[in-house]
Image (tube, rainbow, N blue to C red; front, side, top):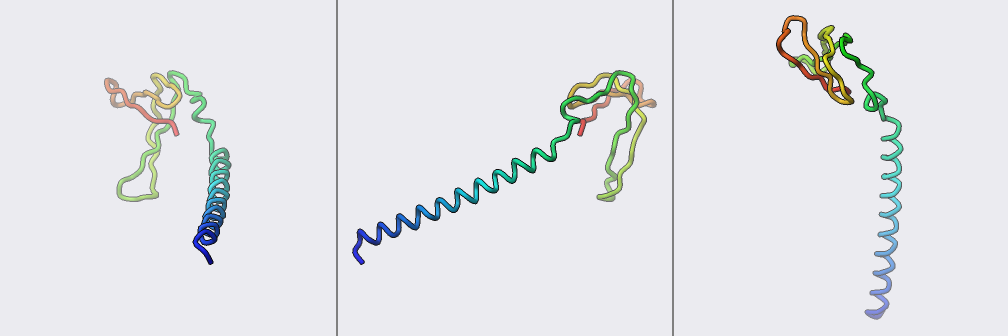
Length: 101
């Protein structure tokens, strides 16, 4: 086998490998995009909170990974798409912020 034939065989194998990687990459990318569309939440489009509404805040207990505590009800001062400003009943002078998720 001459050097030119070896180069031709090598280039053909390289081309096939690049095609297979491109196919695998496009398949993986299509899967990730389809999964992302399924998990979109409507909460990010609008919060539906108005001033003086009551809501609960979910807090994680530091000692346990799976235990949750619902704190509240608290009053909404102002709300935008991602952040809610609120006051707690016992802390009239301090304003807290919660991220919508």
